[in-house]
Each structure stands twice: as structure tokens, then as C-alpha cells.
Length: 271
Image: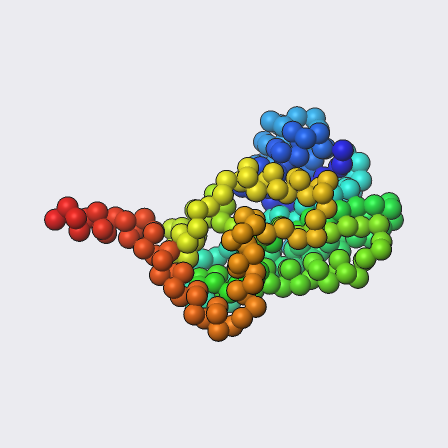
């Protein structure tokens, strides 16, 4: 069993991943800027866990978090880089501060985590870095401009580092979940600009967590989930004309599936 650090562990996919990892016998550090939420979950999960304050944008905070975990549980053997944010809206509607915030949290934050983990794991002779990315890393989506850009960049950075470190003691996995029932998704579903959210049925955090914790043992290079739809999106993202043709049509289909459209149809039929 491994000593695992999960970022964004106070809620959503991170919390579900922490619960699943503990269930399978791992010792887990719950790292989050929301220290109260992480501490509450650590209390529930028991002595195999600890809560760690972490603002992933800060290099100093990363160093301190790794030191804290080493003291409480032992040196981190698996880093699950999960924390992320989104500001919904079309690109023109968001302020530069909001665009920058997503870049700092979704791209710079995981980069800082990998660069903190890598020398420590190399020195101890083993380690595994798991990056939680997004299916939006393959295709640009309406209403997800900067979010998708950060995920494109994160995937490129992850694979570049993994290739550089081939033959070394550290292994790398990257996982791309689809829409998942988390507070972030609820925010997206409430914004008409993110209507493409309704194009597919979202997974539960527990479903995604199972895939993530599987990766601790299996060490896959890359996982798209669900597999069939994920493979289609990955291929479609290679062809610009196909993207420009398909994405507006998928968005239109999603709009018809959205609760607002259903409500409008119901109101129309009642007249």
C-alpha cells in the first residue's frame, strides 16, 4: 500500500478518491485550500489520513505540504494532482483576472506540484504522479475557453515530463474524466454558456474515483473515461474542420436536453 497525497480533497472527485484510496488500504493526505473541509473528511476517514493546507499556486506551500505529510504519514509515494477550478461564461464575458485565475490554478498549480514531487520521488527511488485532466484537453468547447486551454497545456506538460523521465524511478499517469457530478458541474449546469454540459450523462465522483485509484496499481499512461466516447472525442480533436462542424451541433443537441428546454416544452404543452 502507498502513501498518497490527493489535492482538492475536501470535496468532489478529490474527496471520493480519498475515500476510495483509504478503503483499499492506502494512507492518504487530504490536501486542500479548504482546510476545514479537508480536516472534517480526515476525521471521518480515520487515522490512515491527515489534512494538509495547500494552495497549489504556491511553490512554498507545496514544499511545506510534502514536508508535513512526510512527518505525519511518511514520504509521499503517489501524488494525485486533482485540484482545479472553473469560471463559466463565454471568453468575452470573463475578466482577465478570471482567465488568469484558471491558468494559475489549473495549469501552474499542477506543474508546481509535479516539480515539487519529482526530485523527492527520484531521491527516494520510486514514485507515481497521477494528473487528473479533462476530456476538454482534446477538444475546444463552447463556454470552456480558458478552462480547456489549461487542460490542453496540462496534458502537454504532463506527457513531456513523463517522456523526459522515461527509464527513471518515477511513473506517470494522466486521467481524463467526462462531466462528473460535483459542485463544479453544478456551477456549469447553471450557466447557459456551458450548455454543452448536457451533451452526455455525468458520472458520479465515486465512478471516477475508482478509475483513479485503479491507476495507482495499474500505472496506465493515459485513461479516457468512458472509453468509447472518450476515444471518439480524442480522435475528433485532431481535425479542425470536424471540430468546427461537430461542436456547434453537439451544443445544439445539449441545449435541447437542458432543463430550461424541458421546462419550456412543458409550459408550451400546458397551454
